[in-house]
Image (cartoon, rainbow, N blue to C red):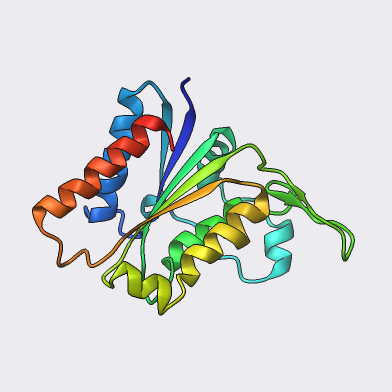
Length: 195
């Protein structure tokens, strides 16, 4: 069965080609070849302001440039997010993008204090693909993989997106061409399956 997929390229450098771009392209091409309906959101090519306070987050209109991206995310049944680790976490531009498009009333509805909130993105799944310079075992066990856990638990699952699968690709500057090819093939498998 064909699935609606949003590929979110979260690398903030929208003018160059990085490993994150190659990975998302491999995923995208395999998904399209398998018959999935796929849309790409390239965060690094978008212009938008950061949200600076709760009042802006709750009341300011969505910047016009983000309307199509937000519609693509709402349309999709599965999200595939790609980003590099910068200073131990996702780049600020990706975080700012998520803050803009996942506003209250769109991704969740607040409830009374102590009550469960309504998750409005239930029925969607996600895959997080993260590249990093460090070893993935060190990132998970020494650093606690806080960036990925935060995105999974406090952003995606908070809005109802579940299950969320994670792929970590570490020591990217040390990888041989053969190792990089294996990572690209892995993305092709995920893309063709829509997972």
